[in-house]
Figure 1 (cartoon, rainbow, N blue to C red):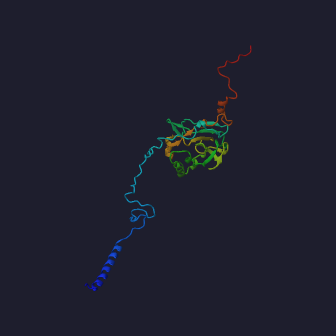
Figure 2 (cartoon, rainbow, N blue to C red; figure 1 turned 120 degrees about the vertical axis):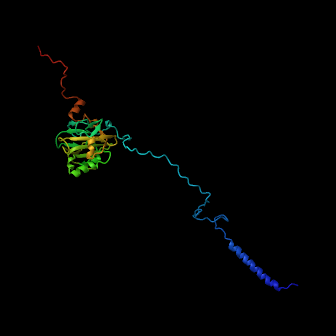
Figure 3 (cartoon, one colour; figure 1 turned 90 degrees about the vertical axis):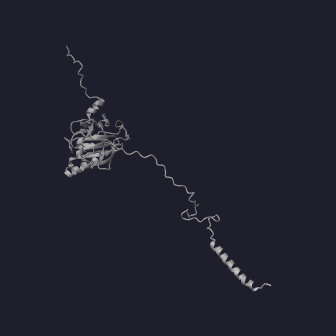
Length: 303
């Protein structure tokens, strides 16, 4: 018959060993965080988002492909004058709304070649770039077209449409103390892509920013600047027109080499207007008292 005492000693040892094994199993088992799928791996910062969005494994993430480059823009030509944009303004012959800035004037110089005082260089010839109209000193000068005054004074060159900086012109005169050598000028934006310039005024009676209508008084006819007598030099600048060459000798006085298109005012001003020069009116309407034709035979006296 077996003794009962050894069994009493064996049972506690077996129970202790079972408890130790259970504790080891519990300690080694760590359940995954709840991701909606039992046993799913816990996402990490390196493998995806933690804001609740689906997380893709590194193998599922598409590789970023750089965009296909488009065609490279054409480089700007080194010579900005090589290709000129077509003007948006209407041609000079289609302009309307212009009147004579000086009434019943005498044309003393046209937009044409001349031997002295030329401004443009066209075909190797110096060109006077405006229309000189003379009446008498102090006569009223009027706006030839409605628009907005851009400038009135002697430092007008920045408004003349040069290719490049024209400040050197006035800076040179300031340095020499000769700013009064410049004429008094009014520049008006005509609102149609063109600018009207009124040069050699004795006085300007408008200021920058003023709106004017055709016929409004803007100043007095004078002889400021290099003028041989009182007159108005009236010019038209097509601000989106082509570039024209200046007379080369002007470069040493600070003038740029190119300027926007100058337009002959006689292509724009109405020849038949009541205030036009009489010679132009005669060409439109004929002379008031025509001379007899030189080919007509003389009348014989009565016999």
